[in-house]
Amino acid sequence: MTPEIAPVKNALLALQDKICRQLSDIDGATFVEDAWQRAEGGGGRSRVLRDGGVFEQAGVNFSHVHGDAMPASATAHRPELAGRSFEAMGVSLVVHPHNPYVPTSHANVRFFIAQKPGADPVWWFGGGFDLTPYYGFEDDAIHWHRTARDICLPFGEAVYPRYKKWCDDYFYLKHRDEQRGIGGLFFDDLNTPDFDHCFAFMQAVGNGYLDAYLPIVERRKALSYGERERDFQLYRRGRYVEFNLVWDRGTLFGLQTGGRTESILMSMPPLVRWEYNYQPAEGSQEAALSEFIKVKDWV
View (cartoon, rainbow, N blue to C red):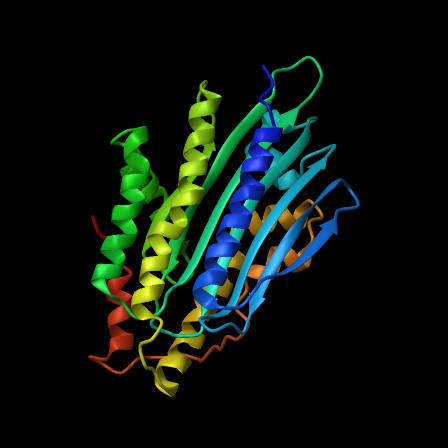
């Protein structure tokens, strides 16, 4: 049985609209939309908010691409995809605030299906959200993870622990031996026989992202900061860039399938800095971050 694709696409488009609307409401600025077409098949709409009242840059992308063959990197890990045409669609977003006390956040929900004549389709859902603070606030981390747990509970008590661990494992910078942030949820290859159940979970994660993030933004957006905090934020943004360019599977898949480079790299922060052998002052808030982002049970 081939799943109905149109309801998934409609839900993703509606999710993009909802997230953009609510981010605009809290910021006061509006998103600029850039609709695009992919020569190999498909297209999307990229929306970016720049230099707003709260967000230095926020990007919320929808894409729906298709092709006759999977890239070699995908078939190497999933040999059953060889010789199949594919469709991939999703919403992906990254929010980089001005204020260093407001964390950067990322969310993504997606659907993939590969088909060939005479064979059952191969399909799955994936996604999640994660938080990257520059200064650690315990109540923010607890709220973030309790919201993630509550999203998962209707789908089973084992879901949150499993997808939290997957998130911690995925958003890990091996070359730095450190986490990118405090994690959240990450899931992939979700394809139980109950398609509607999987689809409902993807929607719950996508819709729940704002419930997790916006209260934190409201709490921290008016905190005063100076040059020291801003410099540290730009330095730590370098870790974000390193992860996305070295380890992120979505970035690699997008580039290898001929995706739109501007949209794929929209996740990059507008300003960033690196400093050789940087060491924060002992006992400072900056030094405390390395301990704060270590994997722990926030719930």
